Length: 331
Ligand SMILES: Cc1cc2nc3c(=O)[nH]c(=O)nc-3n(C[C@H](O)[C@H](O)[C@H](O)COP(=O)(O)OP(=O)(O)OC[C@H]3O[C@@H](n4cnc5c(N)ncnc54)[C@H](O)[C@@H]3O)c2cc1C
Ligand SMILES: *[C@@H]1O[C@H](CO)[C@@H](O)[C@H](O)[C@H]1NC(C)=O
Ligand SMILES: *[C@@H]1O[C@H](CO)[C@@H](O)[C@H](O)[C@H]1NC(C)=O
Ligand SMILES: *[C@@H]1O[C@H](CO)[C@@H](O)[C@H](O)[C@H]1NC(C)=O
Ligand SMILES: *[C@@H]1O[C@H](CO)[C@@H](O)[C@H](O)[C@H]1NC(C)=O
Ligand SMILES: *[C@@H]1O[C@H](CO)[C@@H](O)[C@H](O)[C@H]1NC(C)=O
Ligand SMILES: *[C@@H]1O[C@H](CO)[C@@H](O)[C@H](O)[C@H]1NC(C)=O
Ligand SMILES: *[C@@H]1O[C@H](CO)[C@@H](O)[C@H](O)[C@H]1NC(C)=O
Image (cartoon, rainbow, N blue to C red):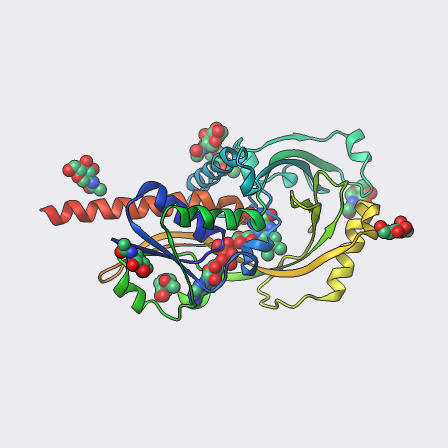
């Protein structure tokens, strides 16, 4: 059996490693036109947090994805090369306690504690509600190359090319995993997927150890080289990947209101990424003529958080269908 994965972002790579984990003897190939620093995954702040807009087919499945992902990353912490680290930080709101929370917290995988009035008064921007969160950071700058190395060590193949349609792949491979992120909109004519444009900047600072989320802004340590990601925007429906200078200055203004020392830091880069938002994240198996196609895309602002969980689900769909086909052909 020959298998290929289209996509080398965090979703494609987690899928590839999960297939190798379950089927060590299959011939597996990753095909992508962008790797490592050229992917959307690379620019993600990499914080393990699931937003309310991250929606799977059912609430139970969504929780299972997130639970599995947390355990998966947590186990990798000991492995320094992949860059994963523990981090705590704060999320604020003026609306309610509940508004400071994320999906992954409501069902326990991530620990949190509400802040009292005294604690809230110590921050430079005043909020009525706030929560302290202990979670994980997954820097894709380190994690993606680590995944590719691991994949290659286990005899995985990597092909660098752009796919324009799926016919040729169907002839060559028995199963194709579609992990094409935002580009699934075009590859699959999928009208349920939209970009949520995110403009961020990376700066250098040695003294910021926690993350902070307030309104649409955030300050998030990357976990290596003293890099900090400052954000950002959530522009629904925008395909514009150009950096906008007005936005850059409003990000720095707002973040330095919160932590004044940010006024005088060196900027490493300005960057725009399109979060591949889908109304419901698509993890589905689609039997085709001779091949099976397994979709795994549409993770919006939570692809890093949820990739191991949706990838386990996608590979389990493949496994069950594969076994079923085997049984069926015996009859
Ligand atoms: C500013 C910003 C901050 C973010 N912060 C976080 C965060 O803190 N936590 C979090 O969990 N998520 C975060 N995200 C979201 C996260 O980046 C995405 O959900 C995630 O990167 C999606 O991964 P992916 O593998 O689906 O897509 P991508 O990383 O875009 O990878 C897609 C892959 O498919 C390949 N591909 C597509 N089409 C073709 C084709 N036709 N032929 C060949 N190859 C193809 C590409 O080459 C690429 O390798 C953030 C996003 C942005 C923009
Ligand atoms: C595995 O697949 C790759 C890519 O299609 C191919 O180059 C290679 O020859 C295959 N290896 C085996 C052992 O079939
Ligand atoms: C998720 O994990 C938490 C804590 O480990 C557990 O209480 C909960 O039942 C899990 N939920 C699912 C759907 O697996
Ligand atoms: C948490 O788990 C409970 C019970 O399993 C479930 O009813 C609820 O929808 C879950 N909430 C979230 C946000 O996942
Ligand atoms: C939140 O509410 C407080 C009290 O009403 C107010 O002083 C503060 O400016 C508000 N904060 C933001 C960020 O809007
Ligand atoms: C992704 O899935 C769609 C079917 O929904 C298919 O038309 C498209 O070619 C697939 N893309 C790839 C690269 O496999
Ligand atoms: C800004 O940073 C530079 C270099 O780190 C330093 O020399 C300068 O004094 C700082 N300026 C202010 C106003 O803090
Ligand atoms: C296939 O058959 C085996 C035993 O013959 C059985 O245990 C298994 O459940 C079957 N799998 C499916 C998916 O039907």
